[in-house]
Image (cartoon, rainbow, N blue to C red; front, side, top):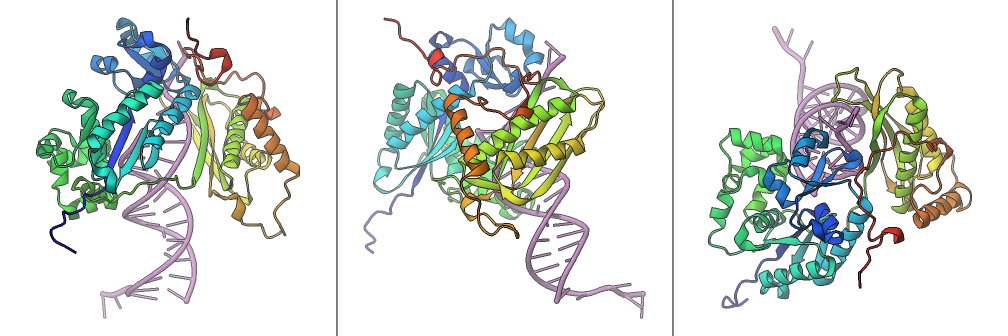
Length: 432
DNA sequence: TCTGGGGTCCTAGGACCC
DNA sequence: TCTGGGGTCCTAGGACCC
């Protein structure tokens, strides 16, 4: 009402990102790795999915196949670890709960990233506060993080990138009100923008849009035509107009996939059945934990596309007559589909299941022949018992017979570190 | 011997309907 | 010569994210 009053400051987003997350998790429990080159491999010890700064400086790219870089890793004395998801998931929970205790609003964006939103009275001295968050996370979890602050999520992502890579910023950067913002953005390539992947980056570069600053100034109509409304949203966010809000609670999943590459080629239908059984069981268990049911089930099967040998891949899906989250009906359907797409004579590398058309269990569509939802007895009670046992005693304690017991197809994890925080056998000790 | 796994959203085009 | 117009739904493919 009064024009004398200063304009309210806009809300500010922070992006908190754990530095080289998986590597940092390994270092928390093996402090001697500090300062040494370290990588963590994907499932099956396949690709490099996390690199320490030392390794990044050596020029090893993200996603590099480990076997192709074997000599490089040895030459530089790189410490190599299989991925240890039990450890990383637990460390992620710890980092997120520290963040949640320090910020008014939080969106857990991935296992190593969270957006925070500061409004109203929180706006003062945000940069200093972010520094406190950073040191508090470090003190309570041992994980180093970087924090970027800005008016929009897309800008906060960029601020984070700068905070992490420009030495002077020391892990925290607030992009708001900086006179040198344009200079900083003109030095960043367009591929660094959240939402600009390799294809769009190449397209933009062909049209002379090379820096983040150039993208910010690009023509809206052209962007909408070539990068869809999503790209337009990105450009508006770069201009400081918030288009993407904070999602405090994740929306319910729409689909769910379980698959894994085999540790070695598999030719036999029986072995494929075993692997698929494990995946269906795991997917169904997740479904039950989410209190959802699936209306549609897809099964797929593929050979190794990198190998010069006969290739075959197939997928088949079916709408379930009755949406369910029971392992038995899903398994029966899945194994039936697998049998129909399987062809002998190929060396398969992967099979898996996708559950889609997910609905909340409570509001499940009843089938025409079903007068009322099934009681909690029968298969459902059995499922609950199985889930509880598997949660308490470890994944796979109780399994379906078709999952097999030989498991020759299971993945390789030859360089696994201990489950330092989730298994009593491996728990970290303190020397007196 | 060896190349991860799990998601979301948008668009174009075809089928179908009135 | 000349072959409507507009709406909805579904799917495949392409893009992106971590």
